[in-house]
Image (cartoon, rainbow, N blue to C red):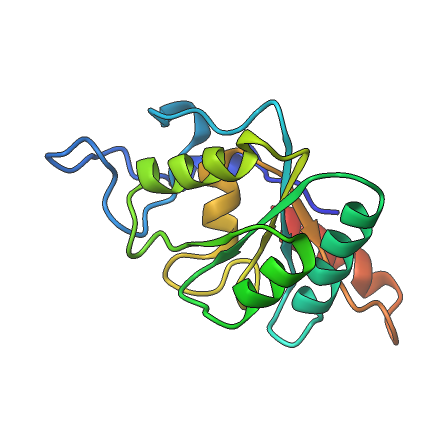
Amino acid sequence: GAARDDSRSAMASSSLTASGDPPRGSVIPPTSLRVGAPATRVTFVVAAPSSGSGKSLITLGLIRAFRKAGLRVSAAKVGPDYIDPRFHEAASGRACYNLDPWAMTSSQINGLTAELARDADLVIIEGVMGLFDGHTSSADIACLLGIPVLALIDGSAMAQTFGALAHGLRT
């Protein structure tokens, strides 16, 4: 899968609001977070180049497979989605939270993620649309939390283009 490139952090906004939080929709480098990400737990974002790439199916399959293997799995969904989180709850047997950088501060997102990780072995976050799409993207969440991205790429009918696409998602 593609990993977060530190050059994304260079695009971060260095200004904070009066409350000490970054402006909504900002990409925040992990080193500037006031509340620590759940570093003791395995946490990652499932993302893809576009909508309709199978993120929900793969996320649900991973949640269920890890749960059947005896792991305590928590899940979250990027953005204001109300359908996928209910499927995540059914697959994991646990509450699923929306992580929406447009409506939440970085402290709230970090707090919710830490809460999900508190009694879990694994936290899986399903991305929204394409990895870099939207005012507050899945890449923004991965950068904010300092976590890796599992990039889903449909490689059928591709050859060298697969490598270029994977490289582009990584950078």
